Image 1 (cartoon, rainbow, N blue to C red):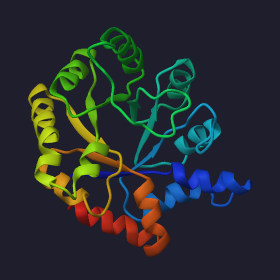
Image 2 (cartoon, rainbow, N blue to C red):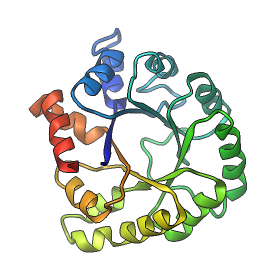
Image 3 (cartoon, one colour):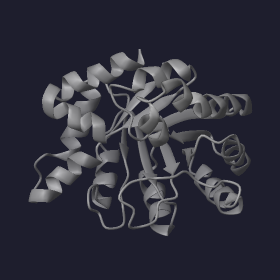
Length: 237
């Protein structure tokens, strides 16, 4: 079964726009779990424009499914991971001012850095996923660095899905095949939605987890959060 981890960054964006605590990020996370989500994802950024560092710490106390914290593995992120001990740490190569993740790690060029970071985090007993493009060399590099999983960056797939979905998913199938052969778990995320999710799942039968935030929260404006989570779970079934 492919698990659905709901990224709640956009809930925090809405809260921060007005100040106060409406919507309540902690309550939304609990509601997502109650509605069927099998995980909660956050990606705190240095400017705290959505999820705040205090949120990431507080969420650890209430999340009962898998808690996934994404981020660039600088000193502050590593300190947060050590304090919260999430189920999964997803390492992304974002610059501090990035609006959103827009590329995977070059695991060949940064193999030394990633190997050292993975080794440090593994001492905490945390599963490690490395965010990569659908490139077999990058998958192999993630394995060499000691990762437990990869997260495939799916924006290119989503961008080309409506033009030619078989061609759009081709590199992902190849990357996932290599990952499975190497014993790596397979996650995926970025721009996945109710239109393109089912075909990705069908094409990658060993997909462990998808992390979805923006599209899911947008759909919830029309369908309601509980119904939307059920719709996404149905696409993964």
